[in-house]
Length: 550
Image (cartoon, rainbow, N blue to C red; front, side, top):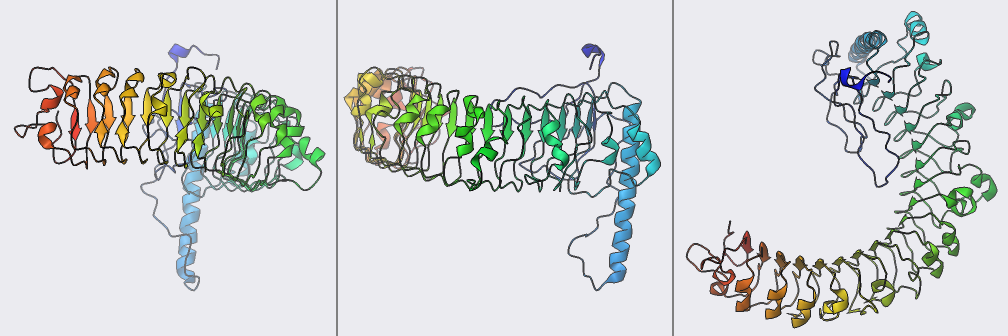
């Protein structure tokens, strides 16, 4: 750690893909890593990917190890089972010897600061079944190791040779996808900042002697995809900023709520509780001091039926995801979450937006109300002061309110609704829109007021009932892509020949006259000025047998 960075060897080590959160950046570029090649392709949910091009003298070779069927053996064939068991033991012995040599190499090379012992479905014994080896490792110093990856094995606990104070600089420990049902940390790891325990068999009672709660330097804790049915005791982890408990069995507690409150630390900023069994908003979040610090909260994919009025206690909240629940209304108190920047309420049961429920959300930038039962785009939505991106796809919207002031809206996705006209959207108050997607509606015309949308770059109106395109579309100098597929257009206005800045127009499945779009000789699009020296940049005209133009 204290060495000159330029003199140290560098390799592409294991990497962690970014999540939906933006936690503190603890992924570090390390100088030299001990990496072991994987035996199968990465699982799509794997948080680590080993580099297959490792410049290291000693690597475990799997090519000469026989392929053995371990599960599903015929128990009646005792001879075959015995042979297979012997082969498995031989494999474990080979792996054990190789791994021990790797660890010896680490002890002899102080420039190595990462160990990657991640595998794919391989049974091996990290305790080596050799007391002499274990005692040697216990008495050795791994103080140069910053990152230790034990993911994707079949470990039930930490190796016993870690049960000593020899990992004093360890910052990242990965036990992803093992078989850990109980765990006892051998000692306090004073610099441990990130711990990954996802895809194991953990419960709230799994941490022996409260040993997890003693790792007080932790900032990121990943406990996804386990068997938690209540919050684990984490109240001593004062530096913990990100906690992931998604894909567990958490549900609303019927016991002592105060006791539940005492389980959580006070400094959490990023909390994921998606894919659990909550039927109402977890009260533990509203009654603990941690609610004062939470910035990003994910409660999507539960069965929550309402948002409590106490939501206003989440004073630091910037991102709230309540998508894929059963929420029917939005309380006015939500508008008191003044710092909210992103709100996701997609796939609920909303029929209306309660008046003033968004009125004070002056920082709200992105709002997702898709897949609900809304019938109108109300003033409470269009009047949002800072709204930039709005998703209202798959509702029953027939009308759009006109903003009282100039709207900041840049992108509107209003696909699969019941709009019959674009006139409300073509008001001057919507002139900041750059992308408008209104596919799968009942729109019949592109009105002359479209010229008010001076900044429009992309217009998607596929799958409507459009018969007429106003010539005023030619005034949209920023427009580079137009989607008009599967409408009822027979003719385009000749003024569109001036739109040499267009890059792509989709006219697929329209009864349009071919000679109105392109000549039959070479496919040049005469209406867009490409065969008369117009110098257009059109990449493609799609529709009715007209071939692509390059």
